[in-house]
Length: 176
Image 1 (cartoon, rainbow, N blue to C red):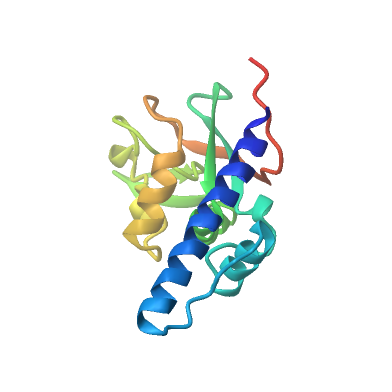
Image 2 (tube, rainbow, N blue to C red):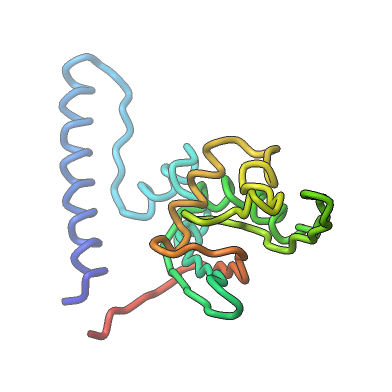
């Protein structure tokens, strides 16, 4: 029996209990609690009250983030996130995508910084006037920064987010 079949049976059993208790409570206090006869009726109700989206399979995403640690030494991390999490970080990701190199003067020397996300123990290079992530993207709140930071490959200093890919998870089967 596949996992999905187990979930369907479990949902049907839960609905049976819900309907039974709704019926008992309605008899007790003459209420009008809804009873759901099928899984589809219950799912439609959840969509109606916005507990799930119209397309259940699109509420989870796989996000793949690749960072550059040192001149094309790339590290990638893959996470599963919700639609809500994606919406929190999307504006920050757009700002990172739109990053433009900037110039600074430090000790009578001109430096051009092209790192879009200087992160780690030795970054940013403040001695060279490089801005921190918080300075580069100061228009975004702490939640956006913390949410994205949680998804990044950690344990490495890196200077650039090279790519971020997102794809909806539909059917994912573990083979090993």
